[in-house]
Image (cartoon, rainbow, N blue to C red):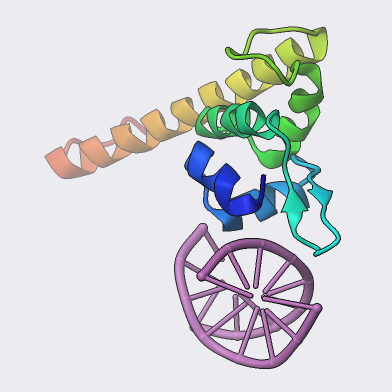
Length: 119
DNA sequence: GTTCTTACA
DNA sequence: TGTAAGTA
């Protein structure tokens, strides 16, 4: 199928699909016309990419995880240790971000309420 | 008409 | 990422 068809089936814009390819997330074949030619597997693969993206993972992390996922998989289940490691690392990063944001929020709370800061 | 690449805001 | 330009 061509790019617009894959876009229709996944909700991703053609722009995003080309970007995924640029990031090494998709490797569509090429027609003699130069048009990208995606196979059916591309649909679930793009859905996996979207899921991982919404989980906060970057394209580089996803590029490492994708090869661990059987392309015919419906639900993304941990298949190889690399996948678990990558997800665990991302979770650590997210936890760290949450802590920093919470600290920033606390500071704002004190400023808003005019409470003297603990230092 | 659709897609491609490149480039800019 | 959206969009415009100039092609194939």
